[in-house]
Length: 228
Image (cartoon, rainbow, N blue to C red; front, side, top):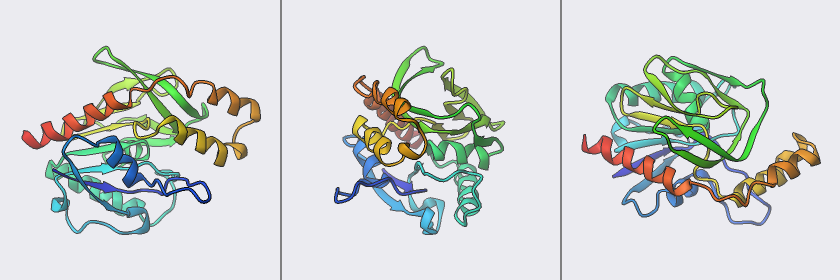
C-alpha cells in the first residue's frame, strides 16, 4: 500500500545535524507495517496530479496556520475535499488535523488558552488513554458536520476526529520522539516561553509515550479502509 505524504511544512533542524523532515518521521513511525511512501511537498506547491496517485494520504504537521495567507492552503483544501469525495483513506496530524477540519466544514484557529507542549495524556472515547507529544497553539474549535470527536484533553477538546468517510485525524504528534520536542524547545521556545516554562515543559519528556500504539491505530485505519 502506497501512502502519499502531503508535506505541509519543513521540520526544524539543528545546524549540522542530519535532516529529519516529516517524510522521514512518518516513514519511521509506520515502519514495519508494510507501507511504501512517496512525498509531495505541497508547502512548496508540489501537488499530486490525482487522488489516485496513492492508496492512502497523510497530511503532515507544519509551523504554518490554516488561516495563513499562503499559496498552498487553498489548493490543499481542494485536494482534501477531492480525496474525501473519492473515498480514499486520509489521515491528518497536527496541522493536517486542523486543515482537514477547515476544508471539510469545521473551523480551526489560534487557541486563546495558549500552547500545549510535551507529553500529554489523551483520553479516547474507547476508554484508552494514550501519552503523545504535543506542539501546538492552534487547534480545531468546531469539528465538521461529518466528524465525531474521539479523543480530548482538558486543554484540547477536539484532539482527534473520526469522519463518516475514510478519514481520521489527530492533534498530537505520534511521530515526535522526546528528543524532537527537546530540539524544538531549544530552537523555537526561547522566543515564545520563559526559561521557567521551558524547564517545566522539559520535565515530562522522560515519561514513556504511546507512539507505537497510535502508529498501530493509524496503520490499522489505512489497512482497514483499503480492505473495505
